[in-house]
Length: 248
Ligand code: SF4
Ligand code: FES
Image 1 (cartoon, rainbow, N blue to C red):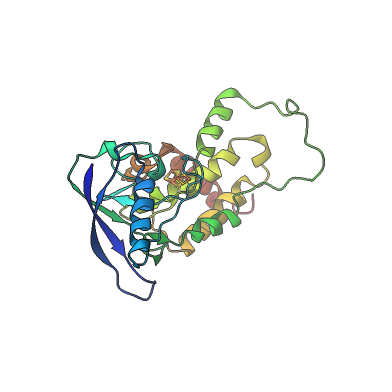
Image 2 (cartoon, protein in one colour):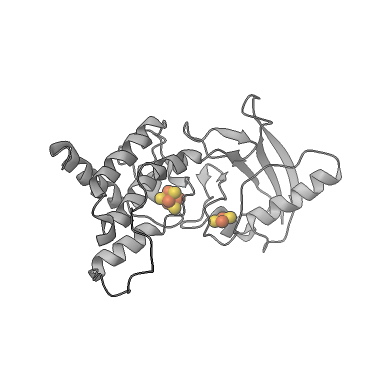
């Protein structure tokens, strides 16, 4: 297959970026990232700077890959990470535009790489439980209702990729924040810090420059793990309780 890749090149946060065209010929079975590997080998061979892009597992589980492909975070296919996207999904001969995540809280580092450490700050503000160390408790010692366990596991599928932020017209990180808060808030182990966690994570979210949620739903549509939008409503209910009963 033949494509023209129109790729965002930016030497550093201080430099202005621009879109550069690269022709490429590639197998339909190549993944999007394998195609970039081939292009980078070619660029290195002719003495040009390879294109910087994030990746790690290439199995859809780490959340590192992060490309806006033809305007869609992770590309046109639903519920897929960039690393799991294959070139056979694109029409032969077309031009494909490749950009980094676009969001105020995710500044561009270089080319297609953005700084997503703002997500780490949100987790640091409450995305954990405090538990005594020691041997692991017996698995059945704390019963968890099946519906709660299912919802908690669904929320815990969030891989922290940031596509929800890139897709949101407000640059909101609410789907990520709510997924992380929800998977703890639905389990017994998450109850002691449930409300301080919600307040702390949202305070960090807002301070880090993420926008507010206006229920556009673009986040859920772009999410490779199909995290449902109702986790945001659940987090908001916890926040409301904190507002009504501060210190409770
Ligand atoms: S909620 Fe979905 S899109 Fe957002 S960080 Fe988690 S996995 Fe990625
Ligand atoms: S590289 Fe790990 S999810 Fe894509």
